[in-house]
Image (tube, rainbow, N blue to C red; front, top):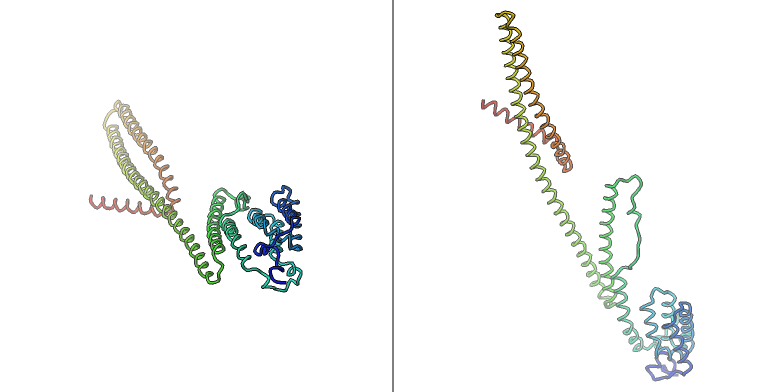
Length: 365
């Protein structure tokens, strides 16, 4: 018996053999149940029955070779999530490609001469495009409609809002980095699997994967640098604004200090005037009769009231101004503390400058 007579099934297409009408009709009914059936259990039963028939009958192999390959390819392409259907399709395909005598021999035996290399190459070429597209689709795009809420996104007991926001922000940044790395690895893997499987190209695949990873890493570093630059510019502008406000408050404080000094001088002048008036009153009391005394006391009281009223008005105005400036200084201090500025040292520097200016004015006088 020659190779053509022993190897039925799909080889019959090559050598011109024909299947019987009964086998043809039976195989067609099974294929129709598999491809057009609506009940999953009936379709699985049909694929199991087809597998058994193809493994035992040369005529069934021939009939399957005539019209069964598109059905099997459709299962492998469109129904890959159904494990039983995929396994049945692969086993049916293996049975169709295996001669009956070879299938009944020991599984450990290898009959390379029984395998038609031309037929297998045709089958591989017909499946290559579909398998390549499916591999690229699986590894380049993640599954959709999969909602998983990590536990890290939930606020912990006793955790304040600021710590929770910082923790969630760090978690999201980490997830973004991992997703980018995963997409890069999947893209490199899909490219390697879809390309030729020769061993000499493995080094080039590793180099492409490394290049993709380096590109993702460089893009991540660029984004971090850009964000850091933006933050730095914002901090610089805020610092300049705070320094401008500090300079304004410093000028206001110097003006208030000058006003306070002028008020103190005016108060001292009033004290001196009051002292002179009292001295004159005492002299008048000693040199004049008792009739002059009531007039002197009235004059003294009137002058004192006027001086006291003027002093109180000026003090009230000064206290109001000081209260307003103190509120501004407190706000400025809070902002400077947020920026990390040592407020105490800044005040010491202002005091030293004011003292130096006072000493210069005293030297000039």
